[in-house]
Picture 1 (cartoon, one colour):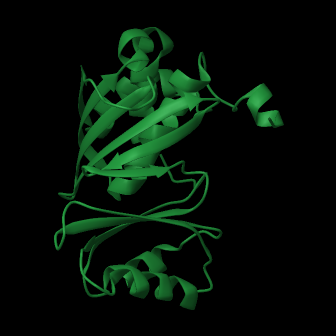
Picture 2: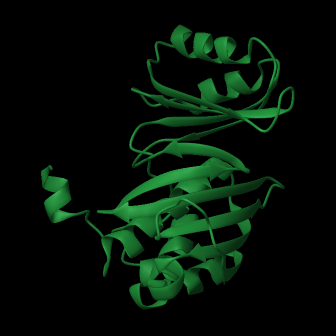
Length: 224
């Protein structure tokens, strides 16, 4: 146990799991979409569905999708801010298997035409766990700089991506692989010890067999 476990995150309350964690989930989804979200469908599971309204979970998720941080004073007013910025959103419920009770499935459409489906949980203390990206199982926390690489399931894709990162002096901390089926689509989740620049992500996008690359950097600020 560390000091963060005792004190919790700096945030707009009332709950580290239902509020701060929910903001982080929204910010993660926004980063992985890689563009401004224009439409969002949020399906709440378990405790998020049953008690989220009283804990401000709905406002927190939308705040994250808008790029707000957990300690931003505008978190409770995210619905009105979303209206100003043209983000359309709906809430519903769903039943998910083998996930934490504080979970949500987010389906996004970007203003530039991109789409994303991400499932994530908030187990407590403001921490999150992403368990699904575009229908493929994953497991990462966003505590390290992270790349989510969609690629064709063919030989050489993994080695060319890791080789490109090594050429940039980036050390891979963890690497997860999953695929929808042999020869179909696959996803790599790569956590690095150093932040991955947008220029490096753009280079990876140009490699053969790479379909999409999205990156997430913890605590990266953006104008909101």
